Length: 267
Ligand SMILES: Nc1ncnc2c1ncn2[C@@H]1O[C@H](COP(=O)(O)OP(=O)(O)OP(=O)(O)O)[C@@H](O)[C@H]1O
Ligand SMILES: [Mg+2]
Image (cartoon, rainbow, N blue to C red; front, side, top):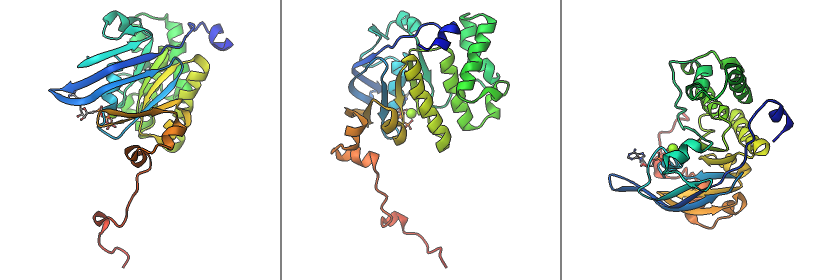
C-alpha cells in the first residue's frame, strides 16, 4: 500500500485468489464449458485467451456469481461463490465486455451509483474516489457527459473506472482492450499492471489481445470450444507445440486460398 493511499483514507487492500473446480456449464443441455479446473493465485494477472464463442464471457459471469454452474464449484478467497453471503462480502468487480453503462445518467453518476445505493461513503469521499478513478483512465473531462456522447473506447474506460471506485481486491475484465486504438489499449494494459503493483489486485482477464496476454500475464490459459487446452507462462505458451494453440496465436493468412480469388482491380 503506498503512503498516498493511506493518507487519503483508503482501506487496506489484500490479495485474494480463486479456484475453479471441475466446472461445467450447459444451456438447454448444450455444453458450453467442459470440466474446467484452474487456480489463480493472489495478486496474479491471469489471462484467458480463446476464439470467439469459446465460452470466455460465460466463465467470467460464473466467477462473478451472476450465473449458476451446471457442475463444479468456484471458490474465491476460500469461500464458495454459490453462497449469497460470500458474494456480498467479497471485494470483486466485473468489467463487462459491452460496458453495461446506464445511458440515462452522467458518467459521474454511473460511477457513483453502486456506492450511493449501498451508502458506502460520505458525499465528499465519494466525489474524491469517483474523480480519482476517472483521472486514472484520463476521463476527468468526461464526468458530466452521458455514455451516449462518448466513443466506444471511452465507454470501455468508464466501465473500468466504475470498477475502480469500489477498490476491489479481485477484478474480472472481459475484453478490456477490444475496440481501442493501440495507444489506448497500451494504457489499459498499463492500468491493469499498475493496479497489481500498487494494490496487489488479482486480475482475471479474458482477451483476444495477444499483446496483453504476452506482456503482462503471469500465466495464460487457452480455452477452445469449452475445453481448457493449456495453462502456462506466456513464454511457454508462445513455444507451445499444440497445433490448435499455435494456429490460434499465429494464424496463417493464405492469400492463394480460392476465397481470395477476386476480380482484377488493377486495370
Ligand atoms: N444465456 C445463454 N444461453 C444460451 N447460450 C448462451 C448463453 N450465453 C452464452 N451462450 C453461448 O455460449 C457460447 C459461449 O459464449 P461466450 O459469450 O462465453 O463466448 P466468448 O468466448 O466470450 O466469445 P467472444 O470472444 O465473441 O466474446 C456461445 O455459443 C453462446 O451462444
Ligand atoms: Mg465474450
